[in-house]
Every structure is written in C-alpha cells, then in structure tokens.
Length: 147
Image 1 (cartoon, rainbow, N blue to C red):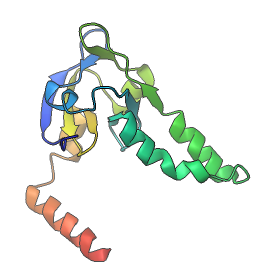
Image 2 (cartoon, helix red, strand yellow):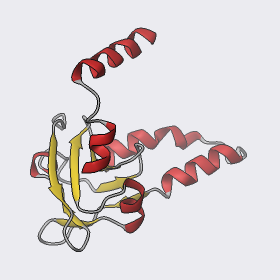
Image 3 (tube, rainbow, N blue to C red):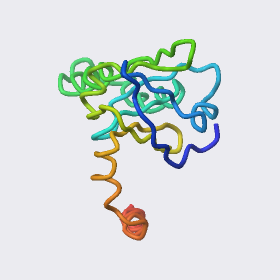
C-alpha cells in the first residue's frame, strides 16, 4: 500500500454519506474491508482491515481477569464499525461517529500514512490549522530526541 498523505476538502451529502476520496480509496488494499474507527481525538479514522488488525494486536493477550484492560478492550472494539458503500460508492457515517467527530457538512479527509482521518472542517482548522509546519517539525524532532 502506498503511503496515504495530503488532504481533501469535501462534504457529507444530505443523507450523511461520504465518498472516500479516490486518491485514498485507490491505495487501500482492494480485497480488504474498511472500518470506521474512533481512533484520534476529534475525528474518525478509516482503516483497512490489515491496519486495524495490527493496531488491535496488543489486545490479543489481555488477561480476562484484568477488569480495567478488559473494559479498555470493550471500549475500543465497540468504537469500530465496518464501512458499507452503496453501488455509487457512498458510505453512510453512523450517527455515533458523526457525533464523536462533530461532522455536519464540510469535512476534511487527511492521509495518515496507513489510514485516513475524517475531520469536520471547523475542528480541523482549530486543531491542526493553527500549527505551522515549523512548529510541527520542531515538535516531531523533539519527540524523536526524547525516545
């Protein structure tokens, strides 16, 4: 799979459906299911099954006797839903996901390497749009040095 990068501004239709932009959709593995995921704060992610499986691997060994980790596993797994597209390629975004991400009409889809994020345009601008590329690079470099 090619690295997913860039951003696309578009809209939900009147029935709260979205078309995953072709620049991303064409790079997802063709025979894999896609999933909506509450992954990052303030947005929803769309991940192919292989990426999602990799991210969930940490829960394979959760001890059922650990109630806190079991609740974390439950919370995460119940925040995932399969993307189902109609014949025109439109995918309805379930209400819980729209509410979680504050999606109403104008959205921004952002490539995140192996998956994409869907943001309300307003939240994206408030969260990400206020950071300069210089600030982003400085922060990334600082975090790498701390590791």
